[in-house]
Amino acid sequence: MNILVINAGSSSLKYQLINLEDESVSCKGLCERIGFEMSNVKHTTKDGRKFEKQIEIKEHKKAFEVVAQLLVDEEFGVLKSLKEISAVGHRIVQGAEIFKESAVVTEKVLQQIEDLSFLAPLHNHAQAQAIKAAIETFGEEVKEVAVFDTSFHQTIPKKAFLYGLPYEYYEKYKIRKYGFHGTSHRYVSRKVAKMLGKDVTSLKIVSCHLGNGSSICAIENGKSVDTTMGLTPVDGFLMGTRCGNVDPSCVMFLMKQENLTVSEMVELLNEKSGLLGISGVSSDYRDVKKAALQGNERAKTALEMLAYQIRKKIASCVAAMDGVDVLTFAGGIGENSCDVVISICKNLKFLGAEINEEKAKETVGGKSGIISTNNSKITICILPTNEELLTPKTLKN
Image (tube, rainbow, N blue to C red; front, side, top):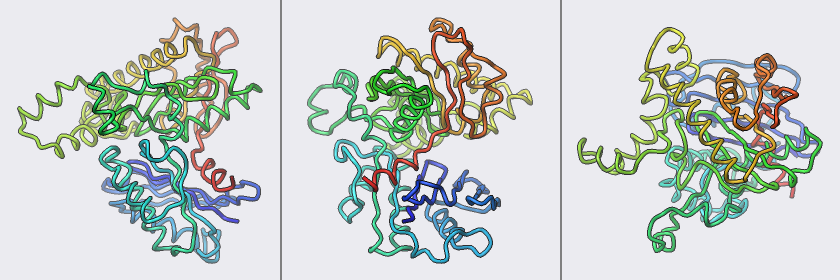
């Protein structure tokens, strides 16, 4: 039984074709830098065949079409026909309080996902489009399941998810912290517990998912008790194009001074801020790092802000749990940019954290490992996330 798992991010589309019988991955790939001048497409099969090419991909629907073609390609494909796919699973960012667990996609569910786009403007619409493209490609007879990022965070207590606004707005509009990257945080917490030979319910874990979109989660006894993203994924700390925490007065001031509409302000906060807005170079960490190494001062500042804000958020998660046993790093930046991880951990001495820099430099590019020293009071790990694997497990259950 083949399950195609689609994970559409703000500027990327990851996929895996998983054999549900043994959970082996027949192929996997990534379309990244979607919406840029040129996008990178990478596709790898279980037997080692690789496809890499730059293709113009302006939207997620086109990315899905590229993936479907690769699955049945004569040279790089693993299927004779798309009919060999039994079901398609989709990672959806925002489920609000509507979806406390995964759901089989119906017209109503699809419309609800689309309706929640105002809470996740960079994701839900793109993910709804991916679902529609999947239905068009495979037909309505193929089961489609939505797995929501927000579900894992439904255990966050009211004292942590409420804002200091009049309570009536929570009752009327459900304005609250929802949190995101739930599938990643859940996967990493279970994986690191297994790697350490411990029960996840015995650990206090701070999980850092660092990528174009980033969040940090406090996981106590296997449950999310707080996280950095809020009502929408724009909350938290500096990201690729998102601003993270700002004084709300900044929003009102800019709208007045620049005569911005609500839609224009949403675009500014979500698509023109973050690493892109500060550096003026790019939203891609790799581009900003390259510019910083070439002497670009704004790029240097952007990287300093990123590491500084992450350290502060880690500390807040430790405070939420009154301690920490394990600190993990995952996501595109967390798994591949040891310089950021080293910079963060070198300034966590108050936690008794000690990092083995050489080990950190070795544990990149998809590797898992402990990068703390033997004297460190907390265990520090780099552990590649696999959000996609949770989707077929949901289907199986």
